[in-house]
Structures are given as C-alpha cells and as structure tokens.
Length: 177
Image (cartoon, rainbow, N blue to C red):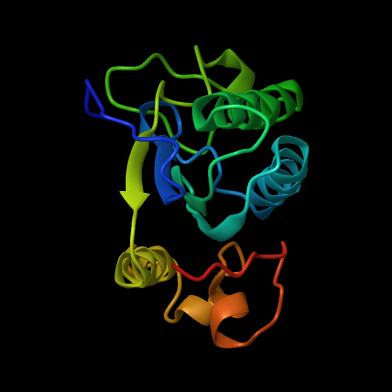
C-alpha cells in the first residue's frame, strides 16, 4: 500500500477501500473464511453504523464501497473489522494455502506474524459515475483473476444486488450520489 495516503472525511462521500492479506497470501481462499468475513462485515456495519454499498472478497484482498461510519472514523471501523476477522481466522488454526517468497514456511494461519497488511487504500467516491466505475471494477475482479467465468458465479460480492435485485450473502444499501 502507498505511504502518505491522503484521506478526506466529512464530505458526505463514499469510500472505496482496499486492504490485503499478509504479504498478499490467499488467506481468504476458502469459502468458510470468506463467509466468516461476510458475517463480521455485517456486524461491523451495524455496530459502527456505516452504509455498505458494494464489496468483493478475493482470496488475498478485499474491496469495500462504504459510507463514513457515524460512530467513529473509517480507520477505526476497518481496524476493528480486520482485528475481529484476524482473531477468528487465526484462532481456528486454518492451514495456510500458500507461502510467500522469502517467508518461513507456516503451517497454520496462526503461525504467521499477521493476517492483514497494515493500512488500507482509500479513494473518495464523489459522483454517480465514480460509484458505478468502482462497482464495475469490484464485480469484474473475480473474473479478471480467473476465479470464475462470470461475476454471477462469485457469491462473495454485491453483484447479485445490482444485477438481480437480490440481497446475496449480505444486504446492501442503495445510495444515490
């Protein structure tokens, strides 16, 4: 992630955030791991009172399109979400799907020095066009990475909400910019 990120808050804009697993390892490679993340995302969203406009969970990173939380900063809400997922995933002694270059072989996620890379990328979404651009990017991500042939085949995204008007694994919030 880039250093010296400028984050702008209090503008009533959406935030397109991206954060990665430790050393971009596929720590969310299993359906069980991604389902755990979805559950924690839903709890964080209600606990910190932010709107969830879009998302996609990839094996090694996450994209979210959210509003600013009403109960704290985006950084605090995302920190708590990442901590909750990390603690639960590391506590279950899941096997690490792959090792990263120049990293000692770890047999379990709990053996790694961390679950997430520090920090996150944040882009302010200030228009309807930018919102659609970010949603299209997110929904195409599993296809572009060769995980599925069509976005509809990847249940860990907001695609169903926007193209089938179904809630999918987690309810979305409709926001007009």
